[in-house]
Length: 343
Ligand SMILES: NC(=O)c1ccc[n+]([C@@H]2O[C@H](COP(=O)([O-])OP(=O)(O)OC[C@H]3O[C@@H](n4cnc5c(N)ncnc54)[C@H](OP(=O)(O)O)[C@@H]3O)[C@@H](O)[C@H]2O)c1
Image (tube, rainbow, N blue to C red; front, side, top):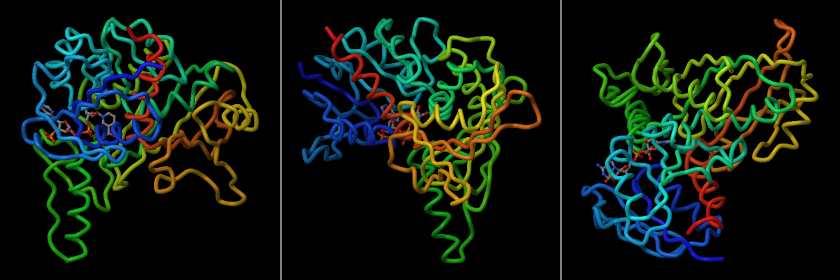
């Protein structure tokens, strides 16, 4: 198999570091690796698979001879550099929201719609982390009995807001231990006027508010899910909440199916599905929890029950490491699928 020259833009960030680590772990056919960030981090050193790399500031020359460029440096950075990377001949797999709803850009979760990746014109979008975790869990149900409506509430980790949010939670834990005053400067959204402590808290705002008083994160879950399933009739409502979890998002999902599915059938179907681990034994108090799913590849499903308030309804508790399957792993799975088709 040919080797693949890779660039990671955002290599010092939460997603970028996971991308670099996974390339080594998964024995990706890696040729050259270029690690890119802003001028702030230029010159820093990062070790990947025992080899030391120096971070470079992204520039117009960064994408020469690059086959695949993973972008995870924020939407504005993607909008600026993706056209330049594509013009240089790279395929961009973008972790930001910059191109996700562009009709010309495929939005791909390999367990659901991997073939869409082959329709790319230079850019492939990786969906929002909460969306990826949800659609992996729902795809087998969607295929078996159809889905009419989804009601999802999320319980999201601070690492979903980047490395500075993790540092803020750490600092709040230290301040609490030292009986000092809590400071909050970042969450829920750095650019918003008000900031709240995340330690001992639940913040019902992820991203800024948008149409109908939904947050952008909530709209991403709605619009992206419809695009990935290719089904605009799918009715979805979402409430997204940040909790003091370091890593792994959790989701309480209620689905109204088109035809009846029993909890036992659902459990069996999800047990056989690719990318899913079912942990669902209430007699033994077994269910997925973020401290156990962090650093793991699968989407974990438990608490599978029939919703007795409607004729065809199911409740699921879904947990997934949003840095892995919700971002870096999904992007690398797309790249692995593309490799045999690269020029
Ligand atoms: N964290 C998650 O769970 C997650 C999941 C899915 C998708 N995403 C998306 O992935 C993207 C990155 O998220 P993250 O959590 O990894 O963020 P992060 O930890 O804050 O890292 C941001 C990265 O972007 C780089 N960067 C910032 N401004 C730049 C610029 N002007 N030019 C070049 N590089 C720049 C930073 O480099 P410096 O070191 O130079 O500042 C750093 O490497 C975001 O769009 C986010 O929405 C995140």
